[in-house]
Length: 378
Ligand SMILES: Cc1cc2nc3c(=O)[nH]c(=O)nc-3n(C[C@H](O)[C@H](O)[C@H](O)COP(=O)(O)O)c2cc1C
Image 1 (tube, rainbow, N blue to C red):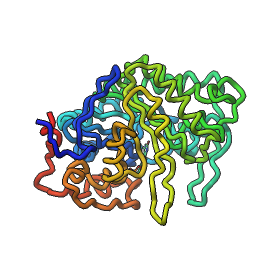
Image 2 (cartoon, helix red, strand yellow):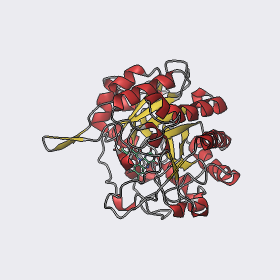
Image 3 (cartoon, rainbow, N blue to C red):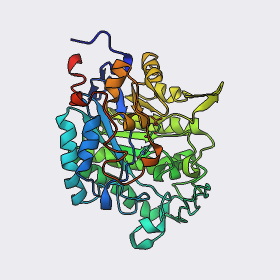
């Protein structure tokens, strides 16, 4: 029985072109760094964090997960480059699957968003460039990076390939290549942070070459139906800005379209605009959505009302929720009931406690958090 009264966000979704993605609803857990994987090893307490947010036929994306020992830039973030990491992920993935959700591992290399202290042997972080991120006054100072030599780049591509293989071995349904938010792939893609003169710099095609090679390597390794990507052409995080974000986004979507059945394209909206004193989503992703052949996920500033609207309008297939899902483990259920939401606590976003600001956000109904959401819409 299909629930006739379901709000658009809670309607089922089936990938149309060549793909295999089938979901009971469209409320996706956005990738969110949680600095609680001590020594880069995923911890047993992550079972609770992710299963709290898992629903039958839902889609969860992990926190950004390092592809190698040079990929780190934040304390206690998980990796997926050693067998120990793979073994540690297995029970977490398994528990999420037992709740009937799909689980995607976000593969990450921070590039220059790091310090020598996070790097093996205290070496400089690696990047497309040797330009340091301009300190923003917050007190955080990233180290001066070292520009990768051309002949070193295949090794980094291979790190992504191997990490993808490991993620599949750990049981994940697929991977999301982190090509957003100012990290390594974006450092290559955007012209503010790519000052190279080799075949990985200069023209748009050259700047995107590294990302395209990562996508191709990962697709070859695990199959296009298990590979998604996250892109944020409009954002300016970490000194990563492009002078022509529309051309950049469009070029990347064309590359994705070459891989039939590609899992999804996940894009982050431009920064919120202030209109009449209220923060508003700018809805800048439509050209990419139209151009992309597969499943589209929109992210950045969405709430229940805006999410329903963009699903109804066909602006996107799925919507990912970050901060609201962090603070409301039963977010799809709250959306269903139009229930009030818990407020997120920014102060505990990046702290290391295994409970506080992590698994202690209350459910609407503490006796009913063994959620079978979606079972109704089979
Ligand atoms: C605590 C925190 C950690 C985040 N970590 C990641 C991350 O690991 N990978 C990523 O792609 N985006 C990350 N983001 C960005 C979110 O995925 C999302 O795009 C952003 O919060 C905007 O969506 P929202 O308005 O629904 O929160 C993070 C955001 C927050 C608040």
